[in-house]
Length: 255
Image (tube, rainbow, N blue to C red; front, side, top):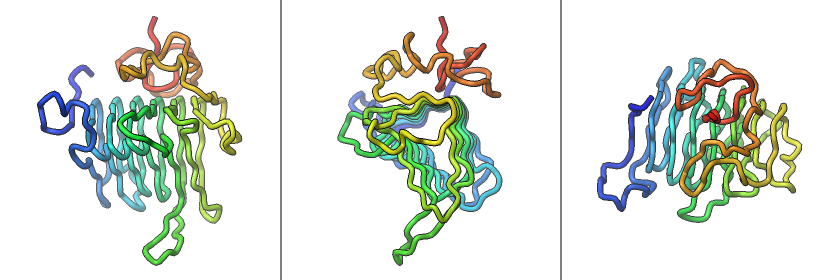
């Protein structure tokens, strides 16, 4: 804390300060396991973290207290892997804040997914879950989504709906949103999403302090305040103690 590792492009002139897509990605390829990212700021690339360890029983990646921002494509891209996350902010990406693709096992706690990308048009949601893929011959290959658990998370952004579920019913598709804040389109079938004690919103008014200034701490009127359940994540991304009912997302509102 307060000495974060920063990964970004190597252009130091001010014009490049917020230009996405200057470098490719941090890629955990098949066979790479038990990696950890903690207190990092990852910005201005194409994909922030790419976990590509198919059929892995050990955690491919644990990511904590990390901000991934201003990616031209995807914040976290996980393919059939095993990823654990807590106290993270994934914001402002050109396509998705996070893709959990072709199955796998995932557990995210106290993470803020806030996709208010403004450099071009975006028609893809913040979060995509998937349990299959189409191979080169056009055949559907099934990959079980054993678990995709979200607890005390915020999933929001500039689109009317920020969650997409691509389920093939012939394979396992196990997901849960527990005490989360979810931005859902009012006309979407996802209004009947399988969730537990989550808050469903249709706009982001009074959710964050200042979206235009990239301040994703909680507004004093935010519905995310005191809306969580107790977890093992006792401090927020800034080191503030979570007491009583915790707030949703990576930041705890401090008076």
